[in-house]
Image 1 (cartoon, helix red, strand yellow):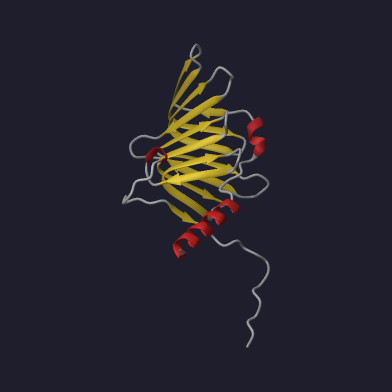
Image 2: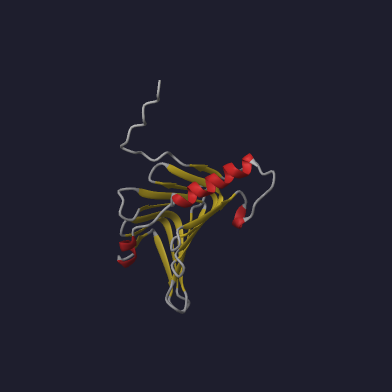
Length: 184
């Protein structure tokens, strides 16, 4: 019973402390991509950027070895960022109305603009405001609803008795108030 209450308290704390609320103005900014190579398939609406790829859009910066961008019939884009040779794809973005950033990394990051979701696969980690941290083998973040899920197995699976586990660190919020003096 006590473990259940502790788990419920942790889930409550996570729901009150959003992992990230990205800068909304970024969506209206142009996307700029630099890379060593680019391949464009206009017929199938696919672009492949390779070699030290850097994508920027407003306050968002994404670094990867390769980014594949595809576009659906409605014009929505989906991007898959990967890094080879044991490296990690990384992103950084300013949080809405705060002087804080959200940073994330994983072997593969998939972003879908249609539903504003990001999926981080394998060795996934997200840090919000330089303090709060979530890590696991898979992290799914719904930016529209500010909901996320992390699991210890690939593709949202949970592996019983796995060596790796989901890890969450929530730092206490700073407050200007001093704790009340204890009575003698």
